[in-house]
Image 1 (cartoon, one colour):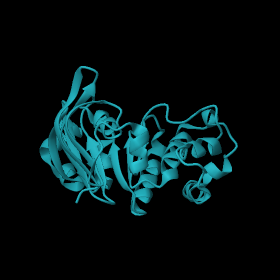
Image 2: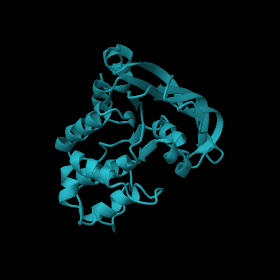
Image 3: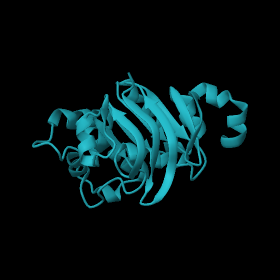
Image 4: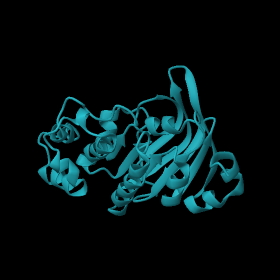
Length: 234
């Protein structure tokens, strides 16, 4: 049984439909990538799973429970974490305060989760009193991921985690996603760095104009001549 099962999804923003009949699934502990050209609807799929778009039809099931139509604060409690591409930290708050915000639905901040995040991202412990807005882009991305991990989600949604990072930080960011997945958290990632995402993921989906175009193992998509020519730059 899939942990996340999206079937025949239609979604968009207001009256504007972006996704049409999209299918996607993520098994427990799996690492799945969504790639495709700009404007394909990749981020809209992720936002739809997290309740941030206008639902127009189809089904979104998580842990065998229908979640389409639920608000993000309800979806978080089911075990889904989300890291948006932009504005994903609270710049005026310290690192520690940002992490504590990740557990805002709980009465008390789980100290064991805070320690686990510090163990995974030692720089965040070092900088725990620093204002998030003064950190580098790579450090802010670590903070955003750390905050999403504060509730120990079963599925982590990552929207363009390498966007805007210096080239030497891109591989480090992907390494950290690998580690999160290796520890048992399922990952659904949207990435413009399609080759790297497909190289590391278990399975991938290629979206074009809001529709499924290809689905296969990551390595198989990388080896697919049509995919390489049309979407990966040869």
